[in-house]
Every structure is written in structure tokens, then in C-alpha cells.
Length: 100
Image (cartoon, rainbow, N blue to C red):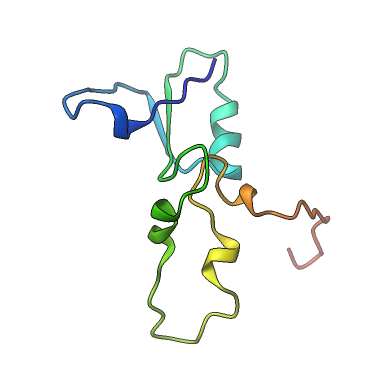
């Protein structure tokens, strides 16, 4: 079972005890969490965004690049929302090349 809790709605004195804390609910984070479903391991997945995209959460993607300029706008390739970057992913999959 998966419970979604908005930490913004909790009292600051609330405590959480967990065996495993995963930061980020993107492809990797949720894949790892899924491996523990049905086990005795208590897993906490922490996501900086909510269940819906928000401008407020996406401000965490703001960067100042002092090196080579970014080729792509950061807001097009990152998403601070449950599911992470899968929210903006086009769904393209390809097999690895030999160099991979």
C-alpha cells in the first residue's frame, strides 16, 4: 500500500520512522521503492513537489550557469512533481549502444 502525505499539512513536531529514505519520486526512486512493496522494510519517498506540477516547486530548478551555457531550458527537462521527470518524458525508449 502507498500512502501519500503532504508534509506541508503536518505539524512540525510530527516524526517519521523509516528503514529506507529515497529522495526523489522519479524513475529511479519509484523503481527502488517498488522493490520493497510487500516486504517488512518501511520506505519513505521524499519529493520536493506535490501530486500536481506547481510553479512554486519548479523554482527549485532555477540555476545560474557560470560555465558553458545550457543547451536546453532547464524547465523543459526537469519536473518537481510526484513521478519526477517522467512528467515531461516523451516515452522514447531505445536499446543501449555498444558504447553504453
